Image: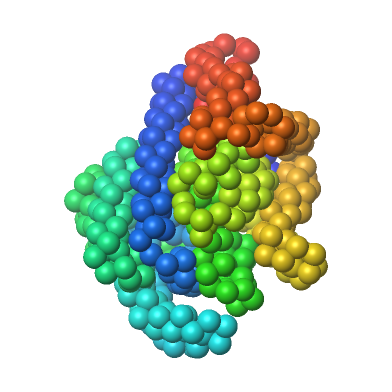
Length: 509
């Protein structure tokens, strides 16, 4: 739905049979997403620790540059294919899906060619700061193969997101990730080379693409070019295109800039920290993109009020996100001391700072899903554009004041600044319960920082061994968040009010 008045449409009752179906799909999709992401991040974190011991710090900086460039190319050419399938009324038609798949293949081929052409200039640019960057000559074309392969993955993956049927899609991601990480660790142990990371990524991409055609239900894709479908996709995706270009800079500008300003060994430690700190916003982002956005779109199509939909879905997002952010703030340094060697000691501080910024990004993402659902993708672009400007404005002053730590603060502060812009946009469409966001923010930082002070500086707990200290931090934060988590769980699982009941003013999700 693209009407700007979507949020003001009067609520109407839905059919009793349809209401539980959508609610069940949302709950099932959320469960699969949470379980799949949780296991995925455990695997990724475990392999991260092993790879950090096997490889040199610069390897992670090099791969951070490569992945930033590949993500940038992908975002610079983003036509919003999956969101188009999710939102468009023709999203289940064979011709529409095949046209979207054809565009996806063309895009994958083009991106791979561009990435190969960029290998030399990118390597030369960063080698001026650190000669180790010449390895980008081989790394970038090798990793680019993942984009070529991804272009051929089945459109049934987009259809699964449209209908919130995420069980098989989650299993595909987990299976390909397990194989990919296994290859990375094995090759790294054998060669001690940064190329192990690239080889693992390519193997995982090939397996993922293959499984989308074998495992997911639906018809096989064929090349198809329907002008009406192309026009519809491009019309919807034009602001997503702009938004994703800006989102690229919002997500990756720190790594690209830091690799030019600081030694790659220091940037490698930051890359490790950013990878760990990103787990929480990645989880919530996955829920927002794969659950919230499709759910909002489907419910708006049933004339539900946007403010009711967002208010109902916000509580579990804030509860889960706040718990994980508070844990990150409280236990980051203890975890790093326990899991990594002395080369990565500063990563603990970086994780805590980045986790603070992640909290603001989580709140912003809740509103971003609502903006997309009503066709306001340009607002997503605006919010991320503000983040980029804020980061660039803060970077040099913070570096002068506190060096690399100051630069990390600039990353987190830019997320806070963009949140205020998201608040302004949200209030213009009658999403006005920002007081809840502020109260949650105070609670999250109070629990996280007080637990950090008690366990690291303020009591005898600071003298405990790292495993005991980490367990203490975990239990303290968990106890503090048990009531809001239980309350959120009850809100999610509360039975839906029957559609015939006069009290029914919204669909429970």
